[in-house]
Image (tube, rainbow, N blue to C red; front, top):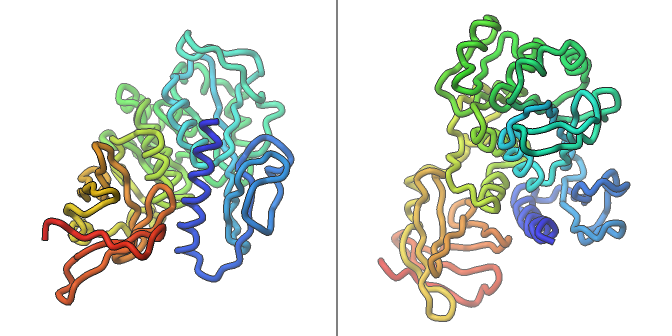
Length: 354
């Protein structure tokens, strides 16, 4: 139930956001991944999938990018729980299709605590758009010739992603040759010494080479996964996922980005967003306070002791988590005076602290 409610929210959010970005481009609709035949279907109209009853996600008809990216999570015995569980939460919330792979289909133990039954072995794993590797017992796992050969044989991979010492798998498969990377703090020197062709950054939350994203240890994987969602989808979608996960420690772009494919380059300047800061009227005689979030470099609406992110679309136009559009109005001196909502364009909520 929680997943369907979230996907419904993401549906309306994505629909509103794409409407702003695609103008008159013809849209088609696809099903969020549900492991049924409808995952591969394309629909002409918005609504619910007749096969699984899930809300369809919009996608430009001429887009060459699949909305349901398939991500292979390679998990080895001893894998660190949060290394893979954090990114798994991010990617699944973003509507990507995640499946697990291990050397065999035998159950494995994560940190000696959690028993995992892999979806596939390296013998029968399907193709993926993204390959992901994680730390924990990595020296033994990624010293396995069969595993590394399997990784080298993967074709048409859009992105490689690693958390913690999962970077050693990519290094061992020569994927990091001539590139920069990072890993768990206790393994930085080992990565540098054993793979001299890799430029190791020792104070980076993540390192983005364009098609290869490596992160520091454990919780840093969440940041790296959100960054990859921002690259593949957009920054606002990544921010929505972080909000739904209640991951309020994310600072977008807090990593080493070595590519022009930077999802943060068009973020509005702080000076632009601070124009909207202040107290405003709200429904039922309540007050709404708009505040600037230093970490996210974004606006949040504070109502009745709760905080909600606002997503910048263009000057004086924002989007809420529910897909509602907010329009700000200015006076003759270009000062913010009030706002109105797409839910009720006839009501004007005035600024209180002019």
